[in-house]
Image (cartoon, rainbow, N blue to C red; front, side, top):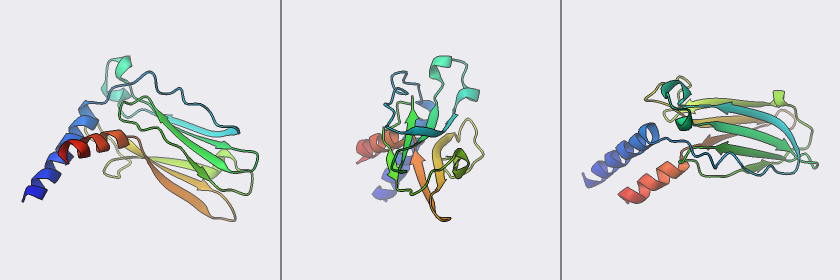
Length: 154
């Protein structure tokens, strides 16, 4: 019973912090670009339609760079207070184009349909790399919020 109450409390705190605590952090969005060529960049805002104050608009960005050895650097970025900076590399043996990359933006529930109370928070990044193989990973833009709620409950 205590565990259920703790889980429900954690979920409620997470949802409240994500949907009502999202504020822009103008200092983010200044991530150092890795060596290599920028192949792909896509930006979305989970809350632009739902706020009247430009200072509160949050942006999520996915950038993909290709290095001289053909490896890829996927660099997510955001001005959200809840975003935890991180990037990852993907081994590749050929030159790729923006047509080899797709990003499907999703809500925390996994839906591509979003609303004011079910905003985007995940990016499903898919890259065609070699001989038909694909690297697909989910990027969370609310990782810091999840960690903060877990620490508060735990």
